Length: 99
Image (cartoon, rainbow, N blue to C red; front, side, top):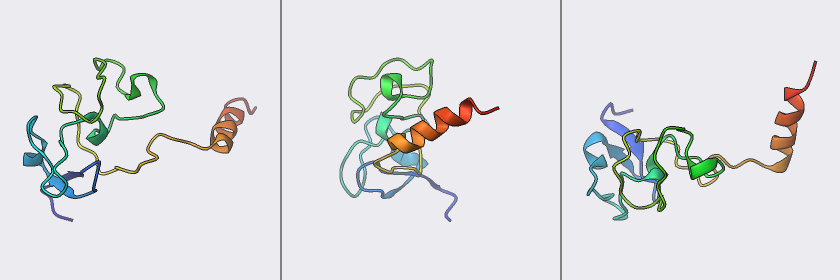
């Protein structure tokens, strides 16, 4: 894998380099903004504020560029990132209380 690749576009999964994550930078392939919550490793749709970083300021539109200081590019752009089936959640809860 190329060392300059830092992540993937949240919309089209095009590989992005570090220089592709400016606040006003868009994906070369689909034209969507790249420095957005949906492109961040902390993005988690099922969490409060849709973010796993508890200190991050709330961002209303997860698909618009922002100045979040916790932004880190991610290679995981799966549509179900953070989503779990009911069975998975139930099993995780049961595992918590096993003796």
